[in-house]
Amino acid sequence: MADQYEAASAVKKRYEENWLKLKGVTAVGIGMVEKKRTGIIVSVSEDKKKIRTRIPAEIDGVAIQIVQTGTFKAQ
Image (cartoon, rainbow, N blue to C red; front, side, top):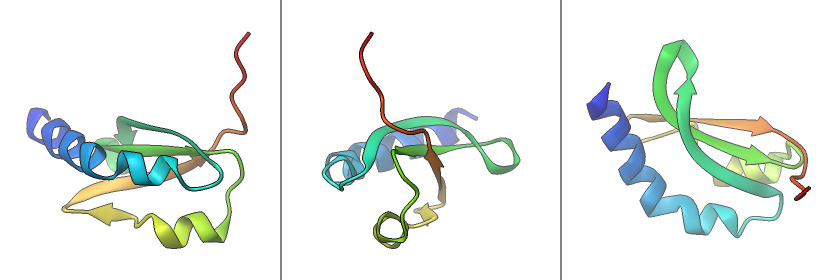
């Protein structure tokens, strides 16, 4: 599990800044994805094909899950 977290952390560090520049991407984090694997969760305001074509389902063996969360607002 620690190895999965380290791999996910390395991928997140490498790509997070660019992904957050994509219109509609609201957050990038590490969490449990498919089949209880540690991976990257990309939160989006709207699930658009343009975002899915720019963010792959996997990088360096790390699963990436795109989740539509809507927009975040401070309360």
